Image (cartoon, rainbow, N blue to C red):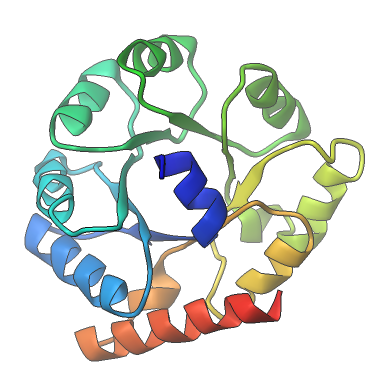
Length: 203
């Protein structure tokens, strides 16, 4: 299964922010134990790229690099096994680089115009951020009403308690971050992951 198909199938993307690679790996493994299959490792801290390399050794999961801004970051992430590059912005140079590497590229949008331009550029999944601040499910619905063809993945403030509302409203997937691991032990992270995966049955 290619990484984009994995996103569409599994619907839950665990967004991991961490201080160091060990923390990122521990969080991801705890979530994987709970059934999460797709991960976005944010790499504002370049040392976290090594976590991508480590996590690629786990079978049957998809590992993506998040918050990538430059082609150099993308190159480092891809060399360490990143299967998808996610950027907080939309820039043609990064899109061209990823296209040349035959690695899927996800861009982040906030407005209708940005979302439409990303769709026109054949971005396979469009990250809608920050979903909570922009108006939550209602904003997603407002975007999809005139443009139902948009392949949106809301992220930013989406929780394990409310993510199914976004999926029911037409999102192709959701990104969930702190709701998985804030103030949680590794065991609790696994239990939260199990709970989230179980909620997919309600869609």
